[in-house]
Image (cartoon, rainbow over all chains, first blue to last red; front, side, top):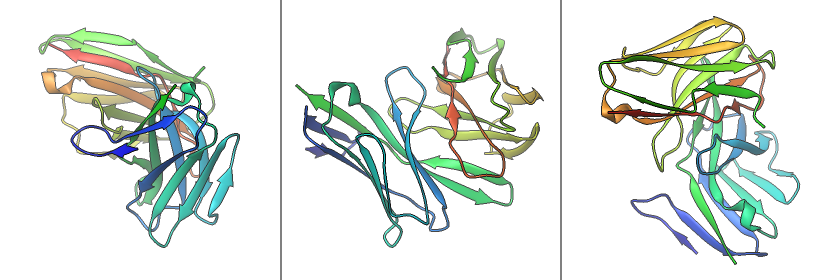
Amino acid sequence: GESVGLHLPTLSVQEGDNSIINCAYSNSASDYFIWYKQESGKGPQFIIDIRSNMDKRQGQRVTVLLNKTVKHLSLQIAATQPGDSAVYFCAENIRDNYGQNFVFGPGTRLSVLP
Amino acid sequence: DTEVTQTPKHLVMGMTNKKSLKCEQHMGHRAMYWYKQKAKKPPELMFVYSYEKLSINESVPSRFSPECPNSSLLNLHLHALQPEDSALYLCASRVVDSVGELFFGEGSRLTVL
């Protein structure tokens, strides 16, 4: 299940089950989105991306869904494995007069139970 | 392995020290970024360099001074820091003016005593 509070939201799943991690983004003009995985003591690692002209993109064991109407992004991980345990961040690409940069969501900790 | 290299991996400094964090990439990316990340929080943007010129400064205190000496290097000079500046400092790079992945280094873990 998922818990939200003062700590980082955590999603606990059984090994072999599917995981769904959700993210709400802020800017309706954002044109590109990335899901990053961050393991303890490491930098964020690219998992999958999606452009705003798409609503679904699949990778190896991962799928990203984009709902622009409600500004919502989700990451689905099939057959979750212990190595998937990490913090997952969504990031939206924001452009303004000064350039472009990524703004990160609050993150979700995925805990895979044996 | 990441193609963005950050040194040092760990740094402990006093509030009166001057130190620098270094970042290097050889992917030909002309946009380079500094992010700050506190525990259990997402990365927060500090600075963006585009074609070696500072393009974004997210109202970062002057005790942090970025420098981009060439297209492969990015430095963050630190002076008179406070204990609350202790964090993981992440460098990242990407291709300018096109939609694409932001590549991150492994970060420099800074502790200010």
